[in-house]
Structure formats: structure tokens, C-alpha cells
Image (tube, rainbow, N blue to C red; front, side, top):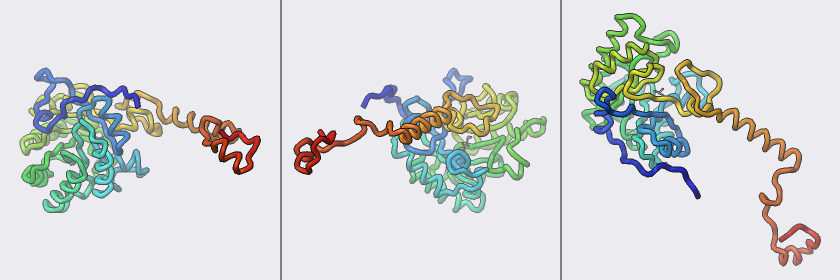
Length: 292
Ligand code: KIV
């Protein structure tokens, strides 16, 4: 089987990633979501640094309207599929809503389920109010990625999927939350749906890398959802998404050609069919058949 795979890279570790800051001359980090083994192979062969098994799974794969419906078992199932591809990028799994809100014990057990499924780190949403849970996870040797700004698990509390940090108090709160997360030991912080200027302030304020989505170019890295990058998800295109392929449109075209070929009898053709050997065909009295 031929492959265009890039040569095997050095696996990024949590300590290596924690040190990556653009202001120190490092390249920006590249993170993309993936939810299964084929997606993990694509991300791996493309040379990304991190794969996120995001709770966006709910919306882009499982058909829900928000991320609140996925469970720890759902994320673990898909994390295991990603991990089976043995990708070089570091695998981060999202802790779903309510899996880190009830008790420290629950939080650590739920995160451990995701680590045992194959993740190296977990991601959770929220600022200073999550510190107790973050400290417990780090105490249990589980690396944590933070997530601030437009946190989709707070969709109802925010009154919709809305850009955050738009006034000065909210911007300062984001800076203070990011400092608290970094101080608690988060090895990186996703900044979602915040003004570019605020993302820069946060990035300048912390020594760990920020990874933006809808947060402008001033972060230490970027993350996008797999289905958005490849144009598989074409129902909603947020302003911050850039599509690098039109795979949904290509798939519909390909599938229509297949349907046409079946209906016209053009598929399967001789190349896609098995045949008896002429001996067996003769024994069966199939003279004149196209056996052979
Ligand atoms: O679940 C997800 O895909 C995410 C990214 C958008 C950061 O959390």
C-alpha cells in the first residue's frame, strides 16, 4: 500500500508542549479534533501536534444540537478508537458536562476512564471555579488542558453560543482565570470565541501555550473541528472556520455516481466480479457462461 505519510516525528509530550510559546520563537501548535481511527490517521499523517477527542463529538458525529448530551462512556469509546491508530500527536480527551462538576472523586474517576481509554491528558471548561477539580486531577498525575471564553457546555448559562470577554471587566476576568489555571498546573489553555485583542492579553499573561478557536492569530496555537477543516460539516460555518476541502459535496457526488451505476447496471462490472474457473463452470454445465 503506498502512502504519502511524513517521516515519523518525535512524539510531543506534555512537558514539551507546556513550554511552547510563540513569543519564545516556537512554532504555533496545531490541534485538530478527531473521533475515530481513520480521523486520527489523517491528523497524524498531516503532522499535527495534538488530537482532541472533543465533546463536539455530540454535534458533528452523534447528531445532537449541543454538547450537553455526551457521556464519559461516549468520549471513552471514541478516545479508544483514536488511540488504536497509535497516532504520534498527543491525544487529549474532553471531560463532558457534569463529569467534573459534582465531586472531586467523580472528577478523578471520570478522567481516569478517559486516560485508560488512551488519552494522555483531559480538557475541561471553566475558570477559577474549577480549580479544586483541576488540582485534584493534577495531584492524580493527570495532565489538564483548560478551556476559557465561549465554553459550549455553558450554552444555557451564556444564553447561546456567544463571543465572550467583550467588555473590559469580562476581558480582565479571562486574564485572571487564565493565570489561575496556569498557576494550578494546566499545561495549555484553549481560548474559544473571544476578541483577538483579549486572546493576545491572555496569551501575554501566561507562560503556558494558549490554543485559539475563534480567538484570532495572537494565540500560541490553533484548533479546529475535523469536520469543519475538511468541509464534511456544511450546515453551519462559523466566521472563524476555514475549510480546506469540500468533502461533503465530494461525497454526495461520489455516492450519486454509485447510485446511478447500480441503477443502470454499470456496477458491478467484470473487474468487480468473481468468476468460477472454467473447469468448475464446465462441471456445472455452465457452457457459454462468462466463467473464467
Ligand atoms: O469539543 C471540541 O471540539 C472543542 C474544541 C472546539 C476546542 O472543545
